[in-house]
Image (tube, rainbow, N blue to C red; front, side):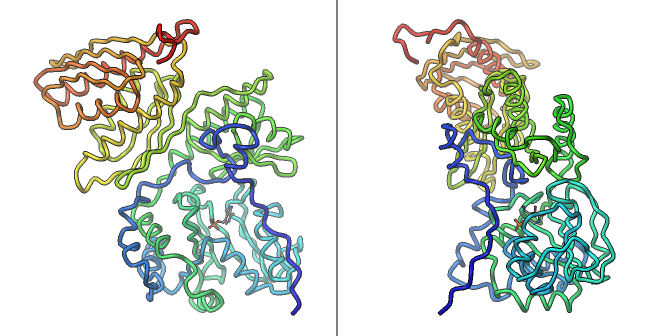
Length: 506
Ligand code: PMP
C-alpha cells in the first residue's frame, strides 16, 4: 500500500484555551477578534429548538433536510432544486474545486482572498493562477475576506463560484449570476451566528446543483445543525447594529492613526507595517486580532468588546498592558442561557435582551443607575412563563458582579438610595458584605421583582434591604430596581485601598 503525500493544511488559529495559557489569563478573558463571527449566538439557538431533533437522533433524516432546503429556497425566492446543503461552505468550496478544477487551474477575485480557496485547489490537484481568464474555476469572494472590499463579478470562461459568506453585511448579492451559470455559496456561520453548527449551502441552476449533490456524501450536515439553521432562518439577522458598530469602530481606530479600508463586512482590514508586532502587542491583554501580509484584520464584535480592544490599544500606546475590568460570564441551565459582560467602572452603557421585556427593562434601569456597563444577551424558556428566565437573568447578573468585585478591595461597601417613581416610593440599602442576605418588601409586586432581586443578592453575595410601595406595580418595581442601582453606585465608589472590614475580608 502506498500512502499518498499529505497536503499543506488550512492553518487554524490557536484555540482560546491555548492562547489563555500562553498569556496567563483565564479563557473567559480572551476576546477573539479573529473569527469574523458575531459575539453571541442568535436567540433561536436554544435547547428547546433542538429538542425534537434530539428525540429523533437515532434516525437518519431520509428527506435530506427537505424543510431546511425548502426554507432556504423560499428565503432566496428560488425553486427547491437550486439548493445544495454542505457542512459549512468550506465543504462546498472544496467540492467545487474537485468538481470543476481537478488537476486544472484556479484563480481568485480579488487576487488576495480567503486562503481556503488555495487549500481547496491543492486538494483537487489544481494550481493557482493569477489570471481569472485562464482558470477552470474562479472563486469570487464578495464581499472579500480579508480586505472587506466588494469586487465586481468578472465574465470568465471557467466556472464561477461566488462566495457570499459576508453578503448579509454588504446588503447586496449576486444571485442574478445564478441564471448565467454561476454557483453562489452562502453560510450560516457569519451573520446567522451558527459557525459551530457547520451549515452552508450552494445555489445553482438545477443541472449544476445536481452535479454538486452527486459528488457529496449523502448527509454531511447533522440533524441538530440542520434544525438550528431552520430555526435561525425563521428570524433572519438584522445587521443594522453591526454595520453601525463597524463604522464606529473604524472611526475610533482612525482617530488612533489606524486607517481601515472601506468594509462591506463585519471586519476591518488595516494595512500597516509590522502586523505581527501589532498582534503581539495586544495579546497580553487577551485581545486576539489576525495578521496578514502587510495588514491586520479585526472582526467587529459589539460596543462593550470593541471598547476593550480600544482600551488595550490605548494602554499599549503608553507602554502599559491594558487592565480592562471587563468580566465575561455565561450561565447555562436546562431552561436558559445567559451571556453576561460587565464592566464595573463603565458609563452606564446597558443592553439587556432575554425576551422577558419587563425585567429586561428593570435590570437595564438598575445597571444604568449604578454606572456600570452591562450587556446581557439571553435566551429562556418562556413557554412556562417568565419565572426561569428572570431568575436566571438576575442570578447571572449577580454572578458577574461578584466576579467583577473580586476581593472587594477599596470599595466604600455601603450604599443607600431613595427613589420615587411617580406615586411609588422605593428605598434600598446595599452592603457589599460578601454574605447573601435580602430583606425585601415590594408591594404590589408585578410578579418577579422580589424573587429577582433576592436571586441577585444571593449570587452577588451582598446584603440588600428594599422597601417599595405605591399603587402601580410597575412603578413600584421600577422604583425598587432604580433605588438598588443608585445604592450600588454609592457602594461601588472607590475609597482607598483597604478591604473595608475589620475581619480583613468580605
Ligand atoms: N467563505 C469565506 C469568505 C469565509 O471567510 C469563510 C469563513 N472564514 C467561509 C467561506 C467558510 O465558512 P463556513 O463556516 O460556512 O465553512
